[in-house]
Length: 170
Figure 1 (spheres, rainbow, N blue to C red):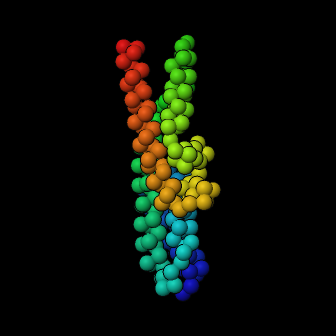
Figure 2: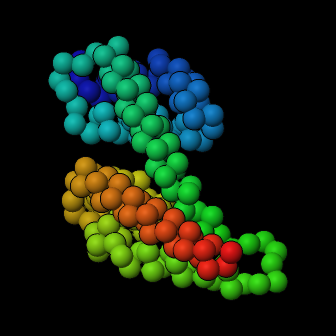
Figure 3: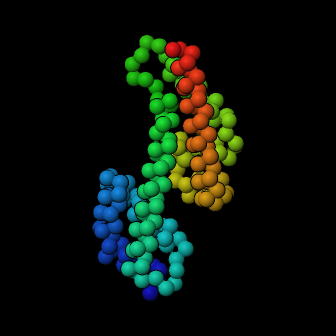
């Protein structure tokens, strides 16, 4: 059976089950749909000739799980930085909020150009890793490496900056 038929049959016969699996992983219907779609694209972008629906489904589920775990790890790392990017809802002293934004901008300056480009495209533009790789003309593995290094570096700089700020204000 060729890969077009396998993909079509998989979605027709097991599409709902894949969506339920995605929902159980992430707890969000839209994100579950995205997981299924991204996994199908990744799996069938380089199809294998000897696939049947059952083996394709196993592979799609594995890709969905890996994608979810990657997203979860990335969000966990990035969530430590997000509060520094958000303006406080009510405050009479905006110097802290503008100082935090300046810290982020300064921290971005400490990244290599590739790390910075990857971080901005992925987290500010909210592009998937594959799109970032395509735009930068490199592999997804290279993008993931740059993102990992960028998030680690930003975390070090911003945590140090926050601790330094607390020492001066405390």
